[in-house]
Length: 309
Image (cartoon, rainbow, N blue to C red):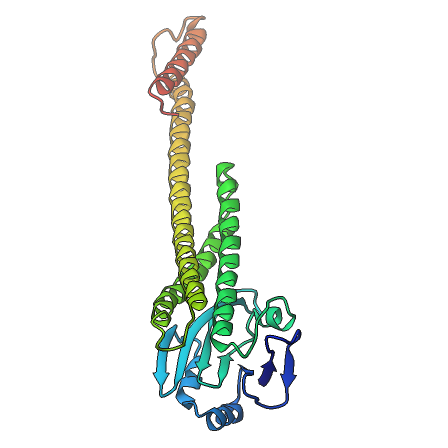
């Protein structure tokens, strides 16, 4: 799909054009072979570079070919299975063109088309930075939701209500955070190279935006690392608590086994058909029972004193 959007500084709404016009934004989403060929012929871009943007594993980077710059980044979105994933986005920046190529719809597209952000397609460099800002805000939103989910599971840990499903969720969260990190860290290097001004002309205001993007990116990276560390801490805490509870249970069962075994020991001895002390005395039964109870109490007191349970 190829669409042409145009908005000047004076216009209030975004116009969708039938064909390319200078100063418009060429929006490309999941192009087929015919559309890729159309782009290469109309805008003189390298076909292989466009195909790179359709590679799910393509990493953020910068390239320059003649007068055109190719800026690869990755943005996060929820797929059909409601899983958080990242996919590549390509900016083709030239003297007269701005083309974006992605596999799926950009999450921030509706924000631009609905007029929620003041922008102009004629200001190509600023539009690129505004799109990058929206991508960064999406990362921050997803990371914030992940942090709240981790805190919720951690609160259940205090009440020993954590379940196996929580650990399955941890695996999913770790995959998401690691994917975010693999996208955000190369993006930082890309933004630093943009600051040099060789790939895209930047005014002083634009440079401030890039610096803010760098700062927000670094904060997102720190937040991802912090969440990953929290997950490790929760795992270690749960493992320690489980080991402690298991040890305590084993100690209790051991003491209980000893206490239960003592009466059987004495009653078994006096149940045998062999001569035993005091076996003809009427008070022998009470002596055995009393000695058994005394032994049980002594074992229980000794176990408590030694903090066996």
